[in-house]
Image (cartoon, rainbow, N blue to C red; front, side, top):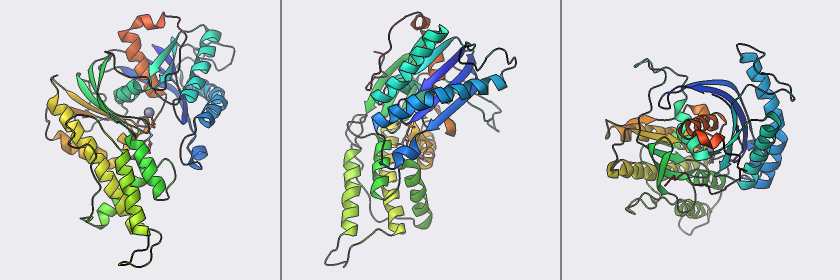
Length: 385
Ligand code: KG4
Ligand code: ZN
């Protein structure tokens, strides 16, 4: 199945062309073309993503990326005549897939409108894709060979629990089967990636803050063993699988205020020195991640299903410390396999949208026959029940 996929749910504009065949548990995925333009440098100056600005950039960048991806594909195709790059010639694809939600609605609309125009022009069906299914099934793509097992792409065994952690989401999802999803828990306020970004801003670091916090935290762990202070672990003992990150963010803010304000005992206040910034980043990271790990543990322990796989996806899954903690969690669940996406597929991209579209097309082929107008849904849920 040849799929042209489009992603514009947040601040990355991305288009890919994939050729996917074979069983869903272990599909053969060939990336024929893959382009991505990040708006990070633009949003950096505002400290976050502005939806209308993101939309304007998507509209500007989509035709450029399309041209690039078609040229890209042409140079890789075994028969160059198969896919042409002219605006007026139809590429050799079966359908177009586009993210319909969740995400920033103006940004989503940019992708949907573009996809529908292409669909009309090329007479190809257009399929709406849930962005979160993209983060889940991003793990199906593998380029690295595991030197131990020599298995290039292990079979995905279901049911699975997926920990989805990004700038917009923090969710634990039960993946009963392909196409059958249930949200077990989610954040009641900020997403974990959003908390990383906000704390980074408090420490004077640019958006997106996740990777920068992670680097600082690592330096602190390298420099000292015990921090001597801790931030609260919100909802750690709430008894459910929900999360909350806004209190943790506020706790960091108060700590920074405390440390920078003049006090009678400590004398003058002032700017944080670099060691202190590293320690604050670490204390925040360790609190944020301990909650993710413990809620994931609870989800695995409490599940009535015979869970075979733990999937971690979304931008925050690129966090090194989270990766280490998840691996160590898995030692308590020796029968469950941990699957994480390759680094380049952790943050938003169009490849994962194409893979999720393949899953949907195989499970629910009638979706391609429906000529329904696609609508952007900022709060689109992944739950299928
Ligand atoms: O999945 P993604 O690209 O976009 C959304 O769907 O939101 O995730 C972006 C988020 C940002 O909040 C960013 O700070 C965070 O992922 N992130 C990280 C790391 N890399 C990206 N957070 C912690 N550690 C990282 N290494
Ligand atoms: Zn995402």
